[in-house]
Amino acid sequence: MSKFESVVQSAAERLVEDEALRSNLTDDEMNVLINWAIEWLEGRVDKASDAAAARQAAQAEIKRLRPALQEINHRLAAGETPDVGALSSLSSAGAALSVSPDRKPLIRSLIAQKVEAWSEE
Image: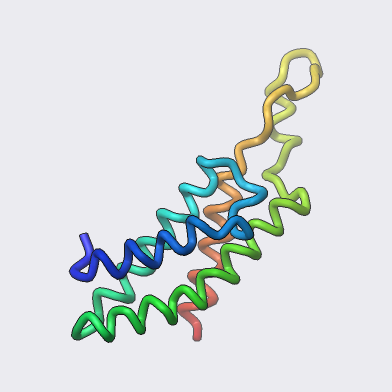
């Protein structure tokens, strides 16, 4: 729990309400992104010395998170998926794969790339 929980919650709500960040994602996929965004926000906002500084930190991180979430959403719209070949080899007698591949590992990988890039700044 964040010491500035209301600040984090308000920032997270702004992200959740932005359709441009979720238009190509299932609810489960969006939950992966939002949970990461909340953890990221908490980690940055909790370092603030007071509520005003916490709000400023949250605003700065929203400016960083929003484009990252948009990029992930757009990449998934462009058809980026995990390796379907590996999944299709599991289907019986070469039958077509009838379920969509789980894109959550791909989303987690894209998140990890963002975190790594941000930690190098």
